[in-house]
Length: 376
Image (cartoon, rainbow, N blue to C red):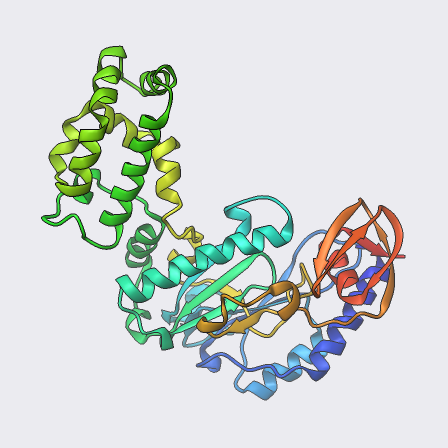
């Protein structure tokens, strides 16, 4: 980022923070804060952290004077949040956090990544409320300003959980460490949660195998570890019967079948692919970390220029980040674009050519923050 681009972004961020209402998180005086500053010509992100505030006004004044590129606060509560070392802070607990980032799920055009990650958020919220019984009023949903969403669980019951307990929860959400026999050992085939999802994924896989031409099905089955032509042929002949047992008479005994064992044991096979579509693909290290820094809602994301936008759960379906989290306008700005691209924003799609071109200010901020362009 050259000096002209850095100055342009600082001016735009200054304009936003001068007018913005900046609500503080709960228990402000127990939070640690961290800030990344604009630095012309530097590719290193150096964070100014171990900062604490005693009031919302003090926080707002600090941000308006500093004009940070990125603003974070701790999910943890500390006795002395501004102490210079973690040991001196004295940890008191932490909010439970889920981070869903499209970059960990799918690659492609930015708007398509945002649409895809929203699906994962909806699955996660359903699990937390329907399967864990969490009160929706304790869930705070935030668009990260970049490629995903954060879910803050503010229920005090989780505050004292350590990394091990949080690991159990995120493993469930992501479908990690599932015991195949346990998934089919229930007395009823209508068990909710992962037993239901597991059966659905397994049935879908078996029926997919049965839909293949016989030679393709045999080729696939014999590609499984330890499965020969005889076992593959027997499975193919009985696949309908096996699927019926799984659907109507589930029992862990089904996994005495060698082909089924091989099918569910594949770390990245057809079955696993279908199972993962039923998980909520959250970022595991964020949830297990009890001393994490998270983006401040209503701050600006320095990698996009968009607002870290708090949302009501009911508003998620209609939320469009490329409209609703954009804070800058449409005045013309000349940029030097590094490559040709399509850029959807503010309800329009801009066909941009490499080189010097004129774009709306909101698009210019996004491109410059992402390192795709410089101010011309």
